Length: 566
Ligand code: 6R9
Image 1 (cartoon, helix red, strand yellow):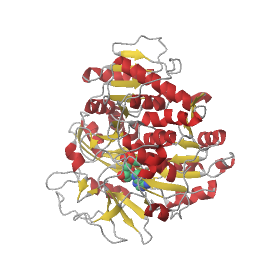
Image 2 (cartoon, helix red, strand yellow):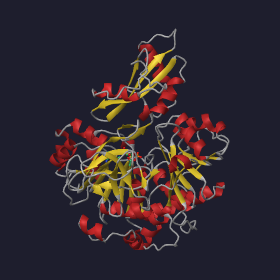
Image 3 (cartoon, protein in one colour):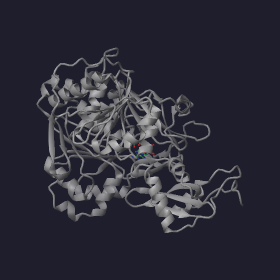
């Protein structure tokens, strides 16, 4: 067991080999996340311990021990190998939050292939661009999502296998499709795990950019070193914890901490696939005696909206430590949670690209509600001037910069070295967020340095939404910005100009909404379309989203000297 030290003490003695030692890893050794998350825990004598408690709709429940997830991940790995899946090939997980998603993830890693988890809510176009970009060769999915895959398969020349995990054989599978039933598969006890090394690729996560297509963030097996230690020191995972990470593995939080950090720490984790309601969530905590809870501000604000009374109906005394990630955690949410749960949510800040928590409030540290906390030991963080990229004094706002070199840093944007390189300036990795540091070394988030919309923790590229909109025959131009929202902090709003001959009315709005719904993920859907006669533009013709956004937020419009018609 590790010793809980204070932040300053850990900072002064820090070396990443603290994590390597706890994991029994030495530089040059094989390192495979699939092995660390299952076989190693069994080898430590915890094979019979529960690794996963899963709950689906209608009270369905499944339980898997570490020995179960070890054997079933072997079975999945073996099955994929049998289909001809080779190391470093991309295998997409296009699944609801069912056990096959979590255990399949380990199976893919065990054969040295790259896991590419995608939200099952993605529409076929969102799915297509990501599979095409990654040149994915196999996709694991469910019957209910098969239609989307079938509609795009002809345009995916690299895709060879479609694995259906819940086929009930009632309707026949088509060419390239094959059924695999994990719970009924032969348990494989002895399996040769592919000898991946520190720099072998492991996970490919897609994240939205301001312009262009979503970017595939490539991680390697060595990321475990960061993910394990942050799970211990920030999420405070300990031997007997029952842990609940509410994130879907389509989002990096759901893999780094919803699979890797949790299972490498050997805790019992709970997963549900029942959707959100305050009652359902509190009941879940009560029933499974959850002790550590990692969630997101949107969920917390939804719980706030549901009110304090509902909390009283449940026994939540098992809760011990709460943490949050994904967007700014308002001071009110921290104060509220302290009042109703007797525990504050600890904010943590990081990105798909950073692979693990970078700045956070540690257990035992004094929380300043509204602040993101302090950098993880081993992480050099600064606030930089946006022109010179030099660190600026305490209290001044600027760009966050991290000195590259921590274990879980992305290794590349898939097939996009140019964009990857542009993220490093003057020896710093630039995540693209603005913040300031206070006198006590706490970081305070200000906002993003680009047009990306963070709606309920999901990053939405205005470009992707605008691209979908202008494909509609009536749409001439569009500009997509955020507007304020209590639960999601911001939501997507589209401004649209119509081509002549089309009428801006409710029916047109509905028609356009239905049209783009097929192309976008539900998370990226605009909440509102406003028809306008023209969009504000710069003299060079660029649409100035900034002006529309300022209007929505009731802010000063700022410098408009480059506006077209001033
Ligand atoms: C893990 C994750 C990253 C972006 C990041 C920032 C925003 C994340 C935050 C936060 C304020 C926090 N973000 N955590 N903003 N406070 N605690 O969220 O990854 O989906 O790549 O998003 O999310 O803007 O740059 P990802």
